[in-house]
Image 1 (tube, rainbow, N blue to C red):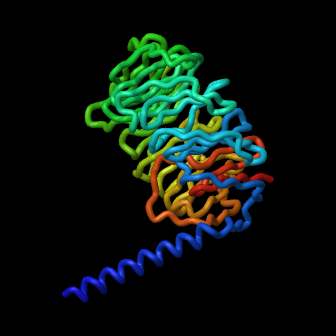
Image 2 (cartoon, rainbow, N blue to C red; image 1 turned 180 degrees about the horizontal axis):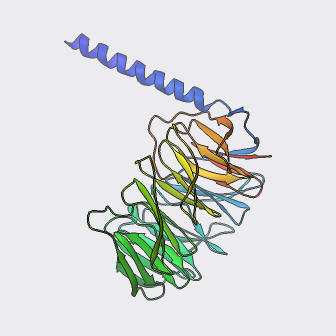
Image 3 (tube, helix red, strand yellow; image 1 turned 90 degrees about the horizontal axis):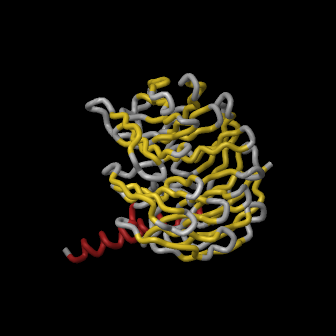
Length: 357
């Protein structure tokens, strides 16, 4: 019996070693372009797997791991500064004002000087492990500390108001002097006082709004995963309701006059005015992080094992970049790709790459 257990342990150890060897082989290989329309301009290595990437002022790349935040020059990839943060698995890119960066970590909300990463102020939260900074407007920042929405002064961290809004994490959107909260319908509140101005309740039996996007006073959302709707908050009316063939979990991104809808195995471009579907690409694998750069749409596809380029007008494939990694386990809600005027910038494990013309 003892020999059987020893043999089983030996086989398991060999399998683990094989998987680690395969992963290491992939990780140590360079990206391989296959008719990819861009070429590599720089790469930078940091410590820790990247959770979020964003670009500030078109010149600074902000990258987060679960314990650090990095600022890089977007043109050269050179490190500008780095800072340790309390352990936090973030689902939201860092949000910036003219002079500061706002984020949550394992202790609360943190405001950093954009130029050098120095601490400006910080505030504790009820449930920091799940809290996120969701939007900024003038001198106000919104923080979803589920089930509460808290609004702070951006300059000094003073709490302006605090209110129970939804039992699940929500996205929020400042609109003029209002703030919009999608949950079971929509709640529109005064941004400076938290007073409810308008409440649009969902029809009985519908699920809550898990994902949404917002632009020009219109909320784009889905509650049944089979339709996408547009609701005009200025005029309190639904503009359109478009059925989709795919009934999977969805992500929404506004791009000009279009709405990009991404599911695990499909991406669609929808006209924001009419709700008409311009094009769809099907049979994808773990499609995520759609990013527009130089009239092309770039998309992680295949357990992040590659970036595929599509013509933004027609959805035709324009090339692919095979990446030196294979994630056996993927984490949703990572934002690992963004674009500046010059480059498409993306993160892969602990590397940041910039590609351009």
